[in-house]
Image 1 (tube, rainbow, N blue to C red):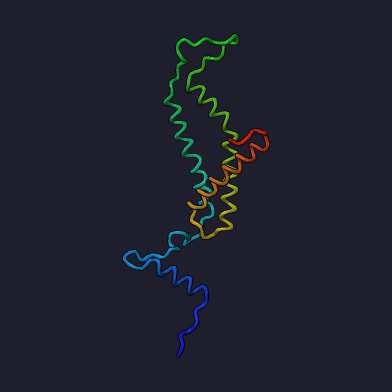
Image 2 (image 1 turned 45 degrees about the vertical axis):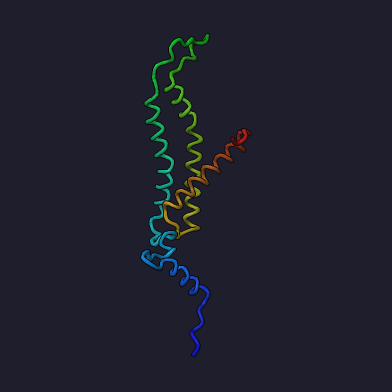
Length: 151
């Protein structure tokens, strides 16, 4: 009597399960797919962390810069021009907040869309993908609006 015929999905599943033979018996899907796709806000939290953790590290680094103006600095006619390295870096950081905010918001939108499309992705995978795609998307949008070239 011939063996029952396998469907295409069963043969694929059998091949995937065969990957984990030996001492490391894990299925390939265990690493790629989220077994519990609940908590739709978790990718948003991780995406926010992808932005805020580096921002906190940069802010702490700003505090280590010298707060005194350079020695021998001559001011310009309006009395400005002698900023400390910390003040100059802090001013540049504050000036970049709108771009940072746009990148964060676009990444959160991308994370929401990715979570709806790829419901089986792990939240960390969605967050990393959203941070990369959202950052690139905001860079292109800023370049299109301001007319400045990318790079």
